[in-house]
Structures are given as C-alpha cells and as structure tokens.
Amino acid sequence: MQLIIKLLNGVFLGLLFSSTAIAKPDINAGKESAGMCFNCHGAEGNSTNSNFPTLAGQKPAYLANQLRAFRDGTRDNGMMKNMTSALSNKDINNLAAYFSSLKNKSAGGNEELAKQGKSKALMCFGCHGNGAKGMGVTPRLAGQHPAYLQRQLHVFKDGTRENGPMRGIAGMLSDEDINAVTEYMGSLK
Image (cartoon, rainbow, N blue to C red; front, side, top):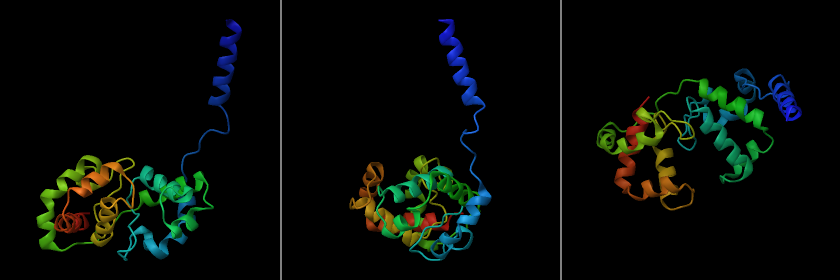
C-alpha cells in the first residue's frame, strides 16, 4: 500500500512540476497571427461588413470553440475551414485570447426597430449574458451587425446551422421579431 502511495505521490509531483503543463494563452502571439482575420473581420476585430461578425470582445471560450468547429468541420464554412485548417489548439487559444482582449464597437441599428426589439431581446440574456455581452461558450450579440445576426437566426430556424436551443428559440420568432431583436442587439455596446 505504501508503495502505491509513493508512486501516486511521484506521479502527482511529476505532473505538478512538469514543463509540459498547459500554457496560458499568449495574447501577443494571437495578435501576430490575427492579420489574416482582419480582411474579413475588420481592423482590431471590429467588422465593417455585415457579412462577417465582429470578433472583438467575444468570450475566449466561444471563439476557441467556433475556431475548432470550423477546423474540424463540425461547423460548415469553406472559407473558415481553409483559414483554420493549419491552426493548432495553442494557435486557436492565442487568437481567442487576443480577440477577447479587444474592445468591440457597436454596429448600430435602426433606432425605431431597436425600440421594438428591446422587450423581445430579454429572452436572449439568459444564455448570452446581461446586455448580450456573451457568456462562456455563447457569443456576444451586443454590437453585432443586425444583418449578420438576422442571417444566423434564419439558419438556426431552418436547421441549416445546428444548435438545438437556438433552433427552438429562432423558431418562435417571426421575421418581424427577428428584425427588431437584431436591430436592438446591433445598437448595444
């Protein structure tokens, strides 16, 4: 029994002082790698094109999860599959740390529709955090381009993009609701 305890202690101490411990993400390394992202996702991760989401201010867990999904093919997007195919998990973690460290800018939204969408958007805060600023592996919706968010809700609604909870929620929204909620989300910071 004492031999087993000594072996377990040795293994524990070896792991504790091992040089192969998981490294903390390196924001500077992420910044050095991020240049390839700026063409679509904008300088400093703030997209100026509604075809591409803003990455600045997203939660690192969400970004890393999505980059891995693109790389592994569980989220379908040919362009992103190509962009992520050579990334290691360390590269992904560094990119996620970098983009999450940046301040996002509001994409804006139609003021009148945003007022209509405010009360409907409250249901989003449970998963997407207070003010839709993201929470864990759920994305930040605040400040995203309304047109981008509209497309995402429609692909959740029709099942093209798989996510059980989002498919159910999007399925409860009319096109008018989707427009109003996304305009509200775009107006947030």
